[in-house]
Length: 355
Image 1 (tube, one colour):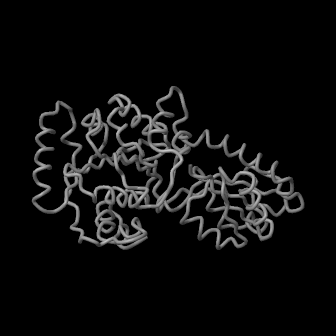
Image 2 (image 1 turned 30 degrees about the vertical axis):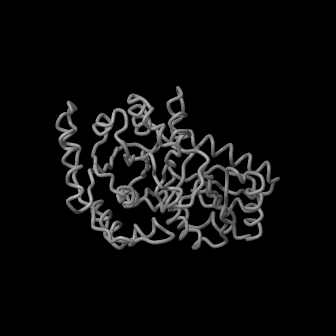
Image 3 (image 1 turned 90 degrees about the vertical axis):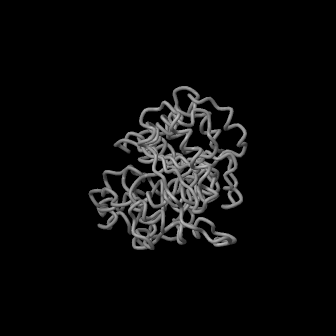
């Protein structure tokens, strides 16, 4: 489960370190922390990393750049906004007069109290605030699909790098529906929950979809994702209406602007799911071996009586990848800054080779 990240900002370095230790000891299974003593260092980190909670103490609550950051709208996904981060004021009665006006509008926490009580207050405020998160996202959610008729091994690297390119402008959730995703081997991550757990929670009556997703959420180079299922055989046993409902729930209640679905097998209701997407990239590798599966897919597509299906499909030939091009560790970073990343950024309209 992804932990809630708290940034502790206070000129008193020992206070920030101690609070971080308290968080690890008392809420370590749910929270983690980073601490800062200089506003410049915090702002540099804040603009390139996702935080859930920011606690502003001495040396930070009177900083004009931080005040501007709190209420600005993001120009790109690397910037954070008030809708995505819970800002809180670490209150000290002796310093109240020095607090900037914008900071006074934030929830206040008495910084000098027992660690257990402090964290209970923080967590309680955060839970109440999180209830409003889906309402803050606004706008219509776009569902984008990716599918390879020839089951190209480069489908998922493309889907991930494309999602990362989209993250520059929008809030993106990546969902992998492959029966054998390869995530554990590629990224060396152990998952407590996976896609099947999230589907079960979301489909189980009236629930907060954003909470269901966050219970199993991970991040990879800025891309939020639900861990793929370990038991891929179960994917073929889920009813078509449940897949359609799940995608609909994510679209309406997850709080994301884009849901990127990386398809594996032809799941129950597969072509209906493609229609539910606003766009589906049908990807193949270069070379004649991919031509026959693509032709068979096109013949199947022509037989479907699904209005709007043909208009949703965008056919792409992936760049040629030399065998052994991405060896060893750091797969995602290699994909991002190699040929696949350049291809994906160009498709998304993001300048190649830039952050």
